[in-house]
Every structure is written in structure tokens, then in C-alpha cells.
Image 1 (cartoon, rainbow, N blue to C red):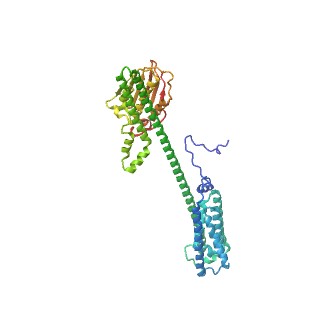
Image 2: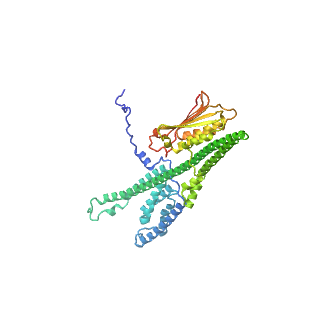
Image 3: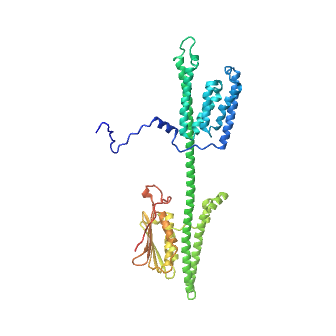
Length: 496
């Protein structure tokens, strides 16, 4: 066994050393050859702009050629005039497709640069043509959709440019133009070495500069596309959240409407039945029962008006903007000026539920005086509605003659309990929406509920709300009256 050939394994828990990337991998990473993102094709407006740019560059190049000709720079060129203009058009026109066909445009224009440098230097060395050569290189790198093909073409361009440079210095008379006539060395380096270095640096700067510029353009376009996609996602999520808020508000209003109608209509039905029974023998008791019907109907109308005001919130805002009235004043008008029900209205609610043969009682237990006033309006209204639903269920589905409503408030929790002494009536099963709404209210405040028949008879509904929902669990420093965080559903337990 060859121990020296074994590679020692890293100790457990140690971070492995980063592997070195090869040159090919580094080039592929720089040009993002494996990136699935492709730059979108240019718009019609961008394509029209490219046509006008190419036409302008063509006109400027023609003017420059004629000015250069007038200076005598074309006297050594033996090609006819029309061929020079054809060469100019061939080098400029592909600029039109620098964004739609970036690789093809780059290949044609770069080959034109190599040919013009060899046979028509006066054409290729025009200032506008140098801009065209650089723009085609930048466009090819910045708009290429096949990044792997782009890398291959750039390697070929690099080989061709420096191969042509080597050929020109080796097999042409170009080198003799830089040799001093008297054999002296006018600078720090010999003329031959300086000429080779100068030409190499110029071509290297041209290629690398065009590549860097084009790659920066490609990455900027990708970054903009990513930001646009994120903005679109945020917009979609905002719309989804808005729709979800609308659905939640509709569910809340439906829950409130069910509780209002179920309670007040039940009270009116019980009182009307009592008035009918005693109308002939006790007109005074019948009058009291009808008065209770009147009061219950008035309250039902007021609470339903408040719910309709919530549905008409958009109209309230528009009316406030058009009339200059504060939105709060208009909202109060829409809600009928009455506050939302809470713990303070529970004694009145329990008193209204009383009828002939049914006597509910109410008791408030506070750990410290005034503790009930610290309960938030949202929790107070939920307790009010749950007690309202529980009393309605007792009247409709039970033979109970007594019911006890107890609200307990300590430093951390608010608890409400409704206990009756009745038995279920036959053929009085409801729709189940009341209990569903009760659980939804409890879930919205991270509370718990215990409901079901008691062993000693009767039925119990007991709910318990934390006064700071979800704050201790998440470590948040929030005001319980101004924040509502949701977690899992309520703790629902059945008792025997």
C-alpha cells in the first residue's frame, strides 16, 4: 500500500479550501456563457434609430473621405473611386443590425477592418470608421444571445488581429518606415521594438476596451431586467394583498352582519311571541315586550348602517376629497354616529337578551380596577360579538332558563364565559356560520376557545384572548392596540 500517494482528508468540521478555476472557466464566468438569461430583442423604435444612425455615419464617412482625398491622402491607392465607396458602404451598413443580429454584424465589420487595414488604410483609418469598428464590437458583446458562440468569435478575432499585425511587421516594408535614416536611436527604445509594442498595445486596448464596454452593457441590461421583474412581482403581490384584504373585509362584514341579524331578529322573535301570549290578559307586559322589539330593531338598523358605511368606504373618501370635509367626519356620518360595540355595551346586551322565562346575568371581574378599559377595541368587539352569538344560540337552540355571562380581565388576558342550564332542543340545528365566525374572530387575535356541553348539564362557551397577541412569541415591540399579528388557528377543545 502506497501511503505517500494518499491525499490526507480534511479534519471533520473544517472548511474545504476553494478549488482553483481554470482559465476557460474564468472566461466562461466573465461572459456568462451558462447564464439562461437572454437580452430581449430591440424594440421597433430602437431598430429605426439604428437605421438613422447608420445613415448619419455613412454620410459623415463620405464627407471625411472627400476631405482626405482633397489633402492628397488617396494618391497612392490604385483602386478606382467606386470601389472605395463600396468598401465604405460595406463597412457601415451592417451597423444597422448591431442589436438585431449582433454576432453577424460584428463579424462583417471586424473582417472589413482587417481588409481595410491591409488594402485601403485611408478608408479604414477614417475617424468615423474607427467608431464603427468599436461600436460593432461593443454591440456584439452587449447584445449577443449565444454567449458561447461570442467567446469563440472573440478568440478568432484576437488571433486574426495579432496574426495580421505579425504578418505586416514580418513580410511588408512597414518596419523600414520606422528605422532612422542615420542609424541613431531617437528614443528610449529602438524604433523597431517601439513600433511592435505600440501596435500591439493599440490593438489590445481596442479589443479589451470593446469587450469590457459591451459586457458592462449586457450586465446593466440584465440588472434592469431583474429590477423590472422584481417590480412586476411586487405589483402582483400588492394586487394580491389588496384583493385578499378585500376578501377579508367582506368576510368580516359578513360575520358582523350574521351576528347582528341573528341576535336582534332572535330577540325580536322572542319578545313578539311573548307579547302575543300575554296581549289579552296583560297589556302592560305586552307593551314592554313590543318596546323591546322596537329597541332591538332600532339597534339592528344602526349596526347594519355601520356595516354599510364600511362597504361604502370608497365613496366616503371621494366625498371627502370633493367637499373638503374630513374623512373621519363623513365616516362617522356613514356609521350613524354610534361607536363600535365593546365591553362597555355588554351589560346592555345581556339585559336585552332577557325575556319571559329566560334570565341572563352579567358579571365583570377585573384583577385591578379599570383593567377592562385597557382591552383594545378589536378584542372588545370580538368578545361582544361572541357573547352575542352565544346568547342567541341559547335562546334558539336551548331550553335554558338562566345564563351567566362572566368577563374576566387580568394583566395579560381577557376571558369571556357564557354558561347556561338548558338542554338542546330538537330540530333546531343552525347553519354553523355562527360558530365559524366565532372561530375566525378568535383566530384573528391568537385566542383559544372551549365550548361544548357540561357534565352537570347546560352548555359552556369560554374564550380567552391574549392582550398582546403574538408579541411575546416573536419578540416584537408593538402596541397591542395598533398591531394584529396572526399565527395558527385557535385552540378548540370539546368538554364532556
